[in-house]
Length: 210
Image (cartoon, rainbow, N blue to C red; front, side, top):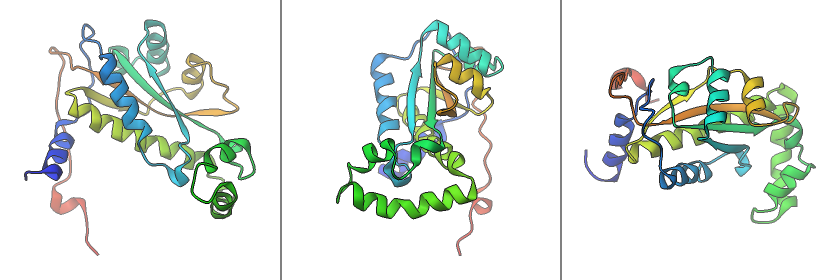
């Protein structure tokens, strides 16, 4: 397959879960800015952009995050770790300041936005899943960052094994207001421990057209 869709699939096929990085190779400032833009342009439910992106490349923060992630090599050897943290339930109150800030950007103004949003928020609140909904938005941005990284020949790994308490402490975030969505590490695979294994279902098993 050639053309734009084929180019995109080539990036998807290039990406894999890198488990160990080359410590001597840093992620450039230009690549760091590119990854941040991949996250910024990602979609989110109601366009609220629930997350805040932390791009961590200082030694002290990286060491703290490695500890928070149980010393997984995919974090402990990475020159860059992205943390997507998201606000907790109180922030999404239709009459609160966060929603006022984000919702007022949309056509029609804040009142139109809130009229559309309120019913969905009340459904989420009634089901007790506001925090799960907010956290799920982080995965969208993370996936776009990892695919974007592949276009820059950067390796990556999504990290779900972490202590929420320790990640928030490393970033000086209040656990009453914030939760960790997901982390992702970025860099260049270690030549000694690189494994580009990618296991996927056969296309005939992966989807059903109904």
